[in-house]
Length: 281
View: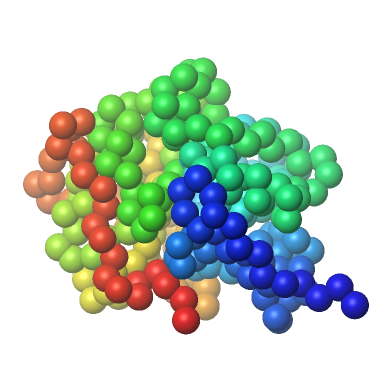
């Protein structure tokens, strides 16, 4: 009897643990220093367990017609949940994954191998440095889900970073990022002002309680030069187990208010989450 057992390893940037899900035969939770990072079901790669990941998945589902293969750049790797999702839902996608923790990539490759035929290339590198060296107009989608511990690193929050993201994306490309904040939303508003300098269309997706400032939580940012299908995103996110709200247009501009774009010299990480915000029991 081959019973799955937890795996723990000290990697380049912390202690990573892979813990089997007792309710799903080949599903695993990845944590780094106790903070949940990824959830993967090897038998059902299209299953997205975390709510914020499901919202990222909704964006990926709506950026192009169903089944169309895309060129996708992922900043932040974890257990490669979204690359697996795209390989399953959009076969033929060419995907690059940039993850600073080489040891984490090795752990995931050893214990959670990608399915045969997945065109996913992993790069052990700093996200900003790799982005700056990437070819222009080379990606249809750029997914940013980078956290140093539980905070978005400062060098991935500035106008200079946003400019590099816009450069790498094709004219009809879409940028989507996982952020985290709470009232008074100084960090989130700064990110909206920053990306508004480079992209014509912006939207955010989050639980109503987060947007009302009642608690700290994830916010998905979407940026593009073309209209975002906010109606379809709203329909999908409203049907989730934990419904979310989509804000765009005038209401999002009102939310941003007088926030200023983040200059390189003013960039700071996202706020420190309150104790237990992203932890597990």
